[in-house]
Image (cartoon, rainbow over the protein chains, first blue to last red):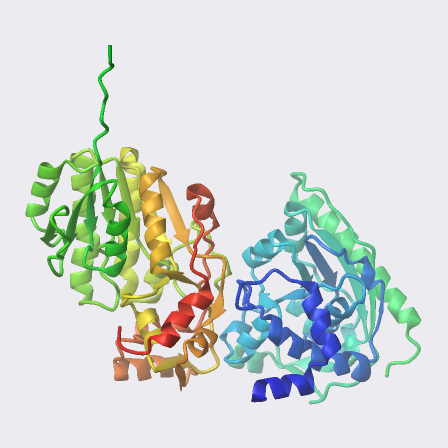
Length: 271
Length: 319
């Protein structure tokens, strides 16, 4: 037995292996897609995400079946917690659902592809450079894409601003309308408490070339996470003004706020 | 009473870069249906009695005599000098000024079909490249490396002639990495070697097209006079380091950060197989979308990626 197959037998369970193989994602003959997704690496990724999802954050996901079984989808959520843990948990919820699981894709910061090893690894598990052209091509390819329209404004916000939605970029709405993609809103509750930051050290962030440098404890706290997925929202592709697009973005934002409030009400305790 | 039969004349075609293995494959595909004339700046290629062959620089005055003598119907310009060959100045003279001369003569002597071979390198390798780059994407490589300027200039020139002289019916083909038996470009040399350098921590997605498929693509493109710019690449992808593994290459990692370090190392080593100006292509993906060409010309690559990489695994000798 080679080292790779030994590691695979130890890390990847047979059920998970079969589960991912059942999804039948369109890939090339060597297991890659144009964005660098790799069917084998994603099995390792999900095997590592499973204990994080189930044991560490004891995630409770409701309504994950609202995500359509096929066709282009944008899963739009609130971003929080300094690290993209919310994206991993949403992705795992979609990939592990029993009925019509899908391989989730996520748009990542432009900084990541320049980081050795990490950039490639993220690509192999389905993450893609957050570029509107990439997002458009992936929707045309019928992918389910996790999007955080707040971007770093959301993930880098301080603990005192928790659960306050920041400004949403309208790009996701333009793309959803153009590609007739369903928008599935998701309210994430719990990730705000994983790495509570009290300040952002801007000069340090600038010096390191990273979006923000939070002043926080160097640990990820095991807060309990609630994911509430809402029913899919569809917006027709008519030619409308930016102001009207803004109104549609507000509709999505309102729905996410409702789902966050639902999660906060359901939450019995922080940890 | 019998009606006079009109026998259609075989078209006369000039093929440049005839000494290259791709050109020879193209010649093989067209020699039955066309009268070919071969030109190469490097050597006079022996192609038999039926195909006149000349060793001639495109800037040479005698090139016009060939146009006068053979009254070409079409030109297939495969004679682009690769970035790893000659000096910048000589490449500029050959690729830009030589191509301009060729296109001027084509216009003067009523050529009705021109196919120009370019490269996907013109898009440039950047961290911010989206995947499946279409033909309308900006050409960034001139801003990234002075060694790729002539490739972009050649394209710009061909594009200007494409719009200014529509009767020339110019098609510009931008293929991904051409590989296979006889191919001597950078990527082919790397795949064929026992040990190949890689930038530590970077394994960009790549596309490979077999030389026979590329020759089919050029022959198809010649036969259908549709103007335009087309990417040529199969819908199959593999990460660079994985491709090396499948070819049985031992990977030699070159430190990749800070970005100045690999550039310095590669410039110092001066490896022809892994030149500093192509470093970006071994770091960031440049994945092109070849579907427009496939749809327009009914092209379907026949050689699977596994077969291509298998060939290199079984041929670990200098090609």
